[in-house]
Length: 104
Image (cartoon, rainbow, N blue to C red; front, side, top):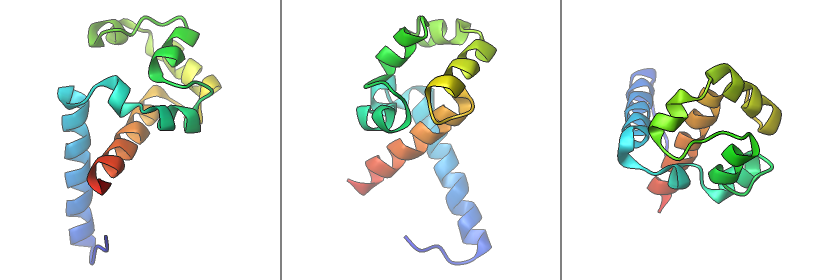
């Protein structure tokens, strides 16, 4: 896809950002968002469940995930993935998901 001009580029970025937020706000499961391909490429784990289990994190629900200390999770992500923080990992997973979804 070729985007001409800064204004069109900015609009496209806003669209992508909104799409990612919609997907993260309940439109997609963690398993879909963090595909096995994504996890194998960016971590030493085959799926998001084993990634969390490897860090002894309970993340079976959004509520449980929100209770995890973010500094502890960021440190775990830094040590066990190609990302510096959990937010960066989520953002990259969202972008990868959207690329996959809109290619099909």
